[in-house]
Length: 562
Ligand code: NOJ
Image (cartoon, rainbow, N blue to C red; front, side, top):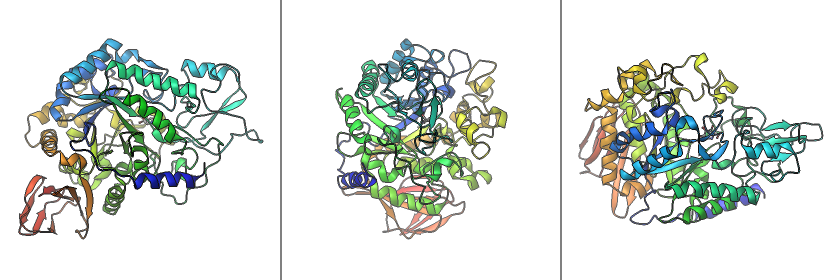
């Protein structure tokens, strides 16, 4: 299928942006908390976070006021890519605990009114999965077509020019079959061939296996990689050097191509229909939230969420990877407000794949020692932009990105692109629970899998609990206020124009209710002319003073007016 037909699909999506129901479904515009299992809390004392560790700290998560958690992959895995390389989709990685621990965690979430999403990787497995062992062994076995195999090009090289998001060719040679195998990420993460009906049926059964246990849905990994061009055509060079939604540093070779044939291909859409049908088998239907990376995702998001036969919501990397300048923020707002399906996208400023938000997006504020103010401002933005939000663990503490030395780097992506790209180890450091405890309260082990950062102790949970002005206490207030205004989850967003250079503004509109939000990214205060006099501040961070139709907004301040 050609790229043009793909665009037709997009046009269909954009012309069918339906209004959300009132009241909205539980997942629409919801606030989730991402638990990065490795680094959240170690109950067993072996140095690695685990399921019981999450259950132990569930009251803390509940106290934040989120609607649910997203739990990173707990499955059996050699951990080459920290669990995104699965060797058995129906088993728990033993250091994380047991199936009983998982059942306990699900029940404990539900007891507290929290939903739980499991991270599921449909598009690839570990090369240590029994399916791959069998598929790689011969061209004739039952599972010969379970992965993506291709003959060499006439010169003996790979069949096309596709490259891995993590750097290097996306093909690995398999001598036993005298063929190449497609792997969009690490060498040890071969792509599953979901176009094969047996494979798809198996993965749908994997979904049912976990849904039957009682989980509320999935965070689906890398949905841009569910399918690929059947004819394996080579990608053209990128039209410009930008490719902004791609991580991996400025020179990641992946940015050099236009990913027409290996990412976000039209063949993925029918697969989404099958996936959605499984979620809809359950009552009430379970939620499917897709990670959309490596592509121009704001523009493409509707295609994955429109109607009732695709995903419920997606999140992308646009706010993470494009937010470096005020100019970009404005542009982002414009792009987002044009394409958003109300409540069907989630705002994400960081996750386990990106640097801590405040350091990445607000370096000047951090350099000026004002990172806590900047963290509150970013949280405000995340909570008030159209769509839901995913809070990555530690963002409620306003943690900055820690500096790691080269010998502490374990992320294979960083190793491939070092020193251009510092990788994902920093954001994956343990949560500081107690300022004065060993490993800041994360683990009793002498050597946890990652060292707690001494520089983050002053921001530990126990310190912030005691400080009414802390980022933690602010986060609770912000989310409580957000819950009190359900329109925030579903209202339209319109970008406000003609504002001072450091300020962005957006109006949330639902029926006759309007909420004007202003956010000042600068360090100094700004004066703003409001559309009318008499507006009142409903929620603010920093200083915000309204006189008539004039708003004075302090540096790093943000306010919602109605
Ligand atoms: C996205 C996950 O968030 C990331 O951690 C992982 O490395 C890639 N998918 C590949 O599975």
